[in-house]
Amino acid sequence: MTQQITVTEHLLLHQKQIPGATGQFTHLFNELVLSAKIISREVNKAGLVDVLGFTGEINVQGEEVKKLDEYANRILIHRMARSGVLCAMASEENADIIDIPHGLPQGSYIIIFDPLDGSSNIDVNVNIGTIFSIYRRKSKVGTPVQSSDVLQCCDEQVAAGYILYGSSTMLVFTTGDGVHGFTLDPGVGEFLLSHPNIKIPEIGKIYSVNEGYWPYWSEATKKVVNHFKSADNVHGHPYSLRYIGSLVADFHRNLIYGGVFMYPADHREPSKPVGKLRLMCEAAPMAMLVEQAGGMATDGTKRILDIVPHELHQRVPLFIGSKHEVSIIRDIYEGQD
Ligand code: AHM
Ligand code: MG
Image 1 (cartoon, helix red, strand yellow):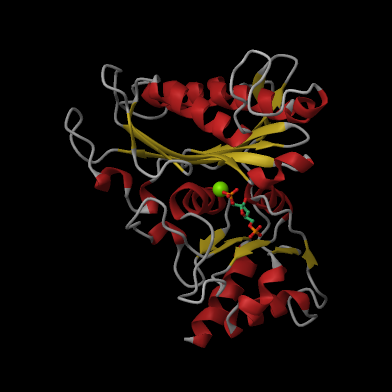
Image 2 (tube, helix red, strand yellow):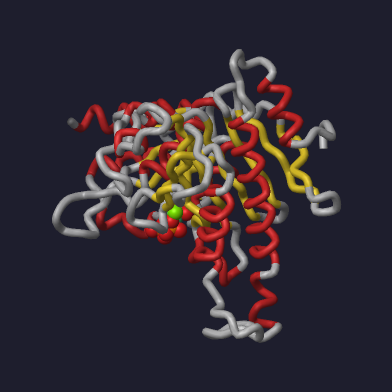
C-alpha cells in the first residue's frame, strides 16, 4: 500500500473541496462499500459451497440457496434502499426501475448497477465484478422520479466504478477527479488506497475480444481485429490477445497495462447487428473511468459518454481502452461509412 488511507478518508478529504457538499454522497458510498465487503465475503467462499454440501434447492437452515448473482443483487438493493440518499435504483437483474420502498428516507441520487458481472465464471473461480454508475436526479426532490431522471446522458454520471473480486478484492472508482484504486485488506476489513490516480498507457500492447464470433462480424470489424493481429501497426508486430470473458477483469487489466477491449456488434441474431453489453450498467461507467484515466470509449464511431439512453437495458457495441488503439478503431469504422 502506498498510503494507509481508507476509501472513506479519501472521500472525506475530497468532499471538503466541494462547496455545498452535504455528506449524502459519502453516505451512499459507505453503503456501497459495505455491500461490496459482504459480496466479496460470499464470493470468496463460493467454492466451499460444493465442498460443504450446501448446494441444491434448500440449505441446512431450510432456506433456499440463491445463486451468487441473485444474492449480490439482493444485498445491493437492500442496503442501497436504506442509504436514505437515493430516489431510485436500477439493476441489470431487474427489468424496471426499482423504487425506494415507501416510508424509507430518500435523497437525490440514482444508482445503476450490474451486481455480479461475468457470473458465468463463478463456477470456475475466474474473476467477476460489480459495476456501478451514479447520477443525480434532474426533477425536483419530493416529486415522483421520472424515467428521464434515470435515462440521462451518460456524460451526466457523477461517479462510476467497479469492485473486482480477484486474487484480492479491489474497488476502483472516479467521482470526476481521476481514477483511484483501493484494495481490500481482509485483516482490517477496509479498502485501502493502493492505486492513486490511475492513468492508462496512451499506447497498449493488448487487444481483448471474443474472436469466436468472427463469422458474425462485419468487414469493418474484421479489419479492426486484423489490425491488431498483423505486424502492420505501431509496434511492427502483433498485439497480445488476452480475453477472460469477464468485463471487469478484462477492463482492469487493460487499464493498468494499456490496450483495448472490444465487444463489437455482431450478426448472431439475423435481424440486425447488435452489441451485447448494456449501456447503462456496463459501458457508461467503464467509459467514465477510462476517460478519467486518459483513455477513450466509443461504440465504434460515437463517444459512449455522448449517448442518451432511450431504454434502461439498451445494448451497445463497446471499444474501450488506450487512446491510440481506440482512435485507430474509430478511423477504420469512419472510413467504412
Ligand atoms: P453478464 O452481464 O451476463 O455477466 O455478461 C457480460 C459479460 C461480460 O463480463 C463479458 O465481457 C462478456 O459478457 C463476455 O461475453 P462473451 O461470452 O459473449 O464473450
Ligand atoms: Mg453484466
